[in-house]
Image 1 (cartoon, rainbow, N blue to C red):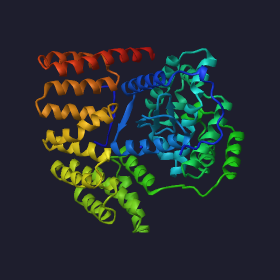
Image 2: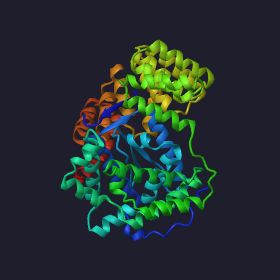
Image 3: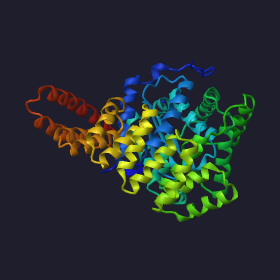
Amino acid sequence: MAVMLASAPHLVRAGDLPALDNSATQSSIDESRLGDAFLRKLRNSTPVIDDPMLQAWVENLSYQLAFHAGLPQPALQVVMIPDRSINAFAVPGGIIGVNAGLFLYAENESEFAAVLAHELAHVQQKHYSRSVQEAGNSNWLYLGALLASIALAASSSSDAGIALGMSSQAAMIQQQLAYSRQHEREADRIGMQTLVSAGYSPMGMPDFFGRLERESRQVGFLPDFLLTHPLTQDRIADSLNRARSLPLNGSTDSRGYRLIRIRLMSLLNSADSQMLNGYREQIKQHPDLEEARFGLALALSNLRQFDQARAEMDALLKQHPETVDYIVARADIELADNHPDAAQALLQKALALTPDSVTLRLYAAHAAILNLQPDAAMNWLEPLSRSRAQDPSVWELMSEAALQRKDSVGVLRGRAELRFLTGQGDKAVKDLEQAIRMAKGNYPMQARLQQRLDKMRELSADDKEIK
């Protein structure tokens, strides 16, 4: 795992919040369907990052912030895009999107959390629904514009390319998506309250905004985030003054953020030998710098220097044997070196201590499949297929395990769910129809598959509404 896939083929106190005009919003059920349809279309049109470690980290932070924002959102879904431009978005229905560039640019965890808190505030205050209504547009049109904007940015090889190649159509899309100044100030204020309530320094927001503004002046074009979130000197000043009026003793950074950031940089620069030299130079200057040794181990593994990578990771695991980042990185080395048995043994041992880790369970299932032990893989995947039914990674692994078990119905079921979640509804329907025919005589199974097929047909119609 830990690869980038192109999906074409964890007491509420939110401060004094303004009252919502519920008559101008959709029901939570409608919003959930909107968000799910948007995510399926996004996976179909744009490359995404499939990495359980990154996914788990952003999910945990998103739930933490949503809890402290008072959002009644039981099922957030996170999607990560391997686009180096600076952007993040939140879609009603609990969809959180993060560009890789946000990790690269946010220098500490409070800055990263500030952006997510700001996006969640937009959702909480129904800014998107208000904007759609005021413009006389439909929700589907808005989501289509957002998809087009993300696809445009992701298809460019660089930020400069985005700026130079921005067509009049793209400019119109950005204008459609841009929040009003009033909405931005509201999201700043509520997002900062959420940030402080969640235990972070409020300075993360003005620090991030200030550097964004300086970067845009120096480079000469606006990051994607500023195209849809207009930033003015007044907003920066208001953000700074508000932060200074709040307690400043919250967390600014964490070891977890530094490690996950290094992991992402390793994924994005997997063949870059300069990273190896850079980490070695850091270690020369600071021999006890744990993060540099972690980066060095990942760089060594990327360059297939597995013995040296193992030695570095073993030293880190000796100091911190329960750090999931290190366990997964160590397993990655064994998988890359074609030793799935060693990876599986390592992950099984870790799961005995941390049985609820979704990351470890997904990795253990992946290792078991590579080790030709599909029954062991299914032991971890079956519960995940119920608790994480919206996760394509689960169904991809389920299909692979079923194939090894020679379970044709299981293969079709897993493949159908994977295709459905990646915006291939027509193909998913055909897979389930075939699975029903193959389950002939097994009436309980046929009934379950038929029920799912009917629901899939109904929801697939939503995908077609997003142009």
